[in-house]
Image (cartoon, rainbow over all chains, first blue to last red; front, side, top):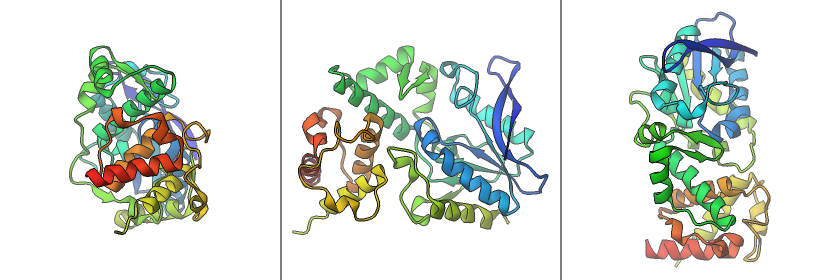
Length: 223
Length: 87
């Protein structure tokens, strides 16, 4: 596994270096992996890398780039818009000469065309947003403040909002809310993996059984 | 009338808390949840409620969520049962 940087286009022109975890042995099958989003990215990080190790063992090169503004990225998150993330993933696909793309959960929203795509347990953008808003109202209530989803959404669309530690701009919220995964992907459903989704866990967990199952579900259609 | 709400709720808690199979069998009405289990923070509770909606086919409004229903297993179970009846 090699961490390296790749050149990512900036929204206003120019470029910046972003980080990616890679297994690259110059093989013909090259899979770009678009990570899960926000909180789920952290909970699925180890699982994602465990799946990558298995793909590497099966002869598939794989690449896990950061989305600008997340993980190791030095870009500000609050100026990102969904299309910037799509453009970033398309640039990563070119840089790593990907032949296929795998989206994980919310990452399925961002899999660049025209690469053949696999979608693992795709999540709707509205559901992701709704859950983060709900977490914020729960935390506010614990702190003795009353916030409602409607008033928070109003605030979010006017001036942006911090949800689960992520500072999102108003344009991001407006455009993200209606997003659905692109059509034509091969969907890998969670119930085929022999366990419940690790993104549900309150604490990041791992499952060798599920990592084996997801890797197998990727290897078969690619080979 | 058969009621699988109890079973489904234990399964959801098993998934969210990463419990081993059977561990959730020990939950009683008084088992503490939000505010008692450190890993059950607001993000985890939000996830739990979303799973509850999906798996029980119910919709939970923000103003229905109160401290009492989240505080104990019994409170959450009673809430889930009531929601399913009205659904």
